[in-house]
Image 1 (cartoon, rainbow, N blue to C red):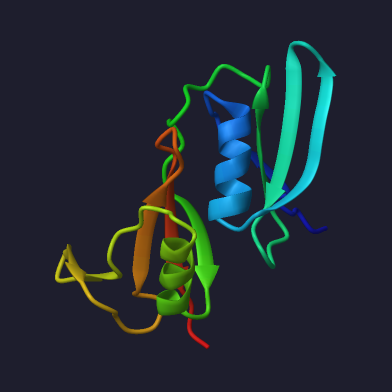
Image 2: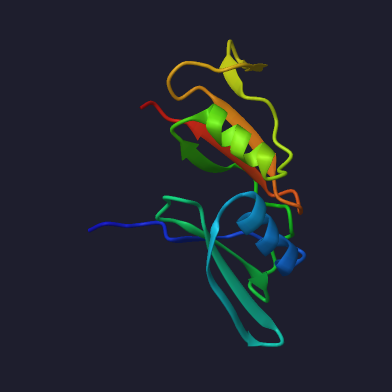
Amino acid sequence: MDWKLELVPIPVSDVERARRFYTEQAGFAADVDHRADGELRMVQLTPPGSACSILVGKGLGDAAPGSVQGMQLVVSDIEAARAELVERGVEVGNIRRFEDGAWVDGRGGPWNSFLFFADPDGNGWTVQERPA
């Protein structure tokens, strides 16, 4: 039996601001934007090429905005991914690698090139280059 991760909630303080960030800056697709009543809003967003989506909204739980750290995306070209995020206005760090127990700037070998960014609430994302 397959067990597939489909949806991960990301707590945010302002749903519309988060929706704009993830669609306009991070490049995610807005799959669903549903309002059930004045207390519930669900916005499902999916990174390009991903089978897993995130969910931002109102009335979805009590996790603190900005409390999710380490969500990870993988890309085939870390430099192109960084350039796209920068072009879209995302504050993104330099490409880094883990070497001798510490983070250092610059590309690494297979599976060892990363960049980091956060959404407006401080939820942290890692982008990792996967080998071709």
